[in-house]
Length: 368
Ligand code: 13P
Ligand code: SF4
Image (cartoon, rainbow, N blue to C red; front, side, top):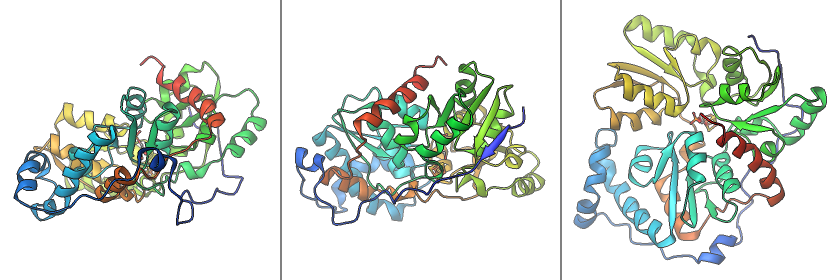
């Protein structure tokens, strides 16, 4: 089914996420206290203690970099215990975060599900702001921290709650499905959320002939190509995935006809037309685990190939290297600062969180 209509932004975008500095101490810093900075020395003891962790990533992190990372890894893992904290890390995090300090890793759906099961008092989101907000929405009584609140997302920036209210006026009675890559305010105006892993299932679960699906136009087109439900879309794009082109993928295939191409559904339609598989970040990881291709082009954020390479050293990854500048704001030094200073605390207005929670939980509780 072709896409029905695609609408564009009608209202001004909100201000930058980070408040002007210097900031006052967060509520969490006052509650838990600020801890002194440990010594971050590279010595024989640190080398010995962290050797098993380096063993995991030695194929993707050069030995010359480990003396910088290892003292942070050691300090963060000790502080997590002291703070009763867990780290949720998205598949796009760098290998030293993903493999050496994260407690749970996955795609947006898996991280949202994990966030409902966390027992620790503190959640650190190694990912972007909408993911941290989702964790907070699902855990209103826990402290949720993001190491750099400027880690935004071009999709989340593409739509506001006012835009949804206007769409509802234009299409009365048509249900609104919001990608989780949206702000809490947008989720609060939505009937249900979805991720790239369950978008089709969510759209079809509503039993409606038409669905407003936002803000990713390309994901909307991909869903529309798989269903008879008429999709009313929005013209938001991921600044990382929109840069891939069908032409570059055809060139890879011409140079090696047996190469496999797997792509995230945030890519434009001409890119997905070239793909042997389309799926969420975890769907792509699972595809490589199951198929073990000789050579594969991962048409998504570049760091993910490093993380999959750790599990599948026999596979050759071709990486058109598009990095997400927001995901890359999260680093080991900033995670350490987060744990020491209990910064930056994610706060969601309780009234908005309550409405947003309904949309997120409705998605989580859908039977798979
Ligand atoms: P996934 O849910 O597939 O991990 O996607 C999140 C994202 O931001 C992709 O750009
Ligand atoms: Fe947002 Fe794209 Fe970055 Fe994912 S990769 S967080 S969709 S900007």
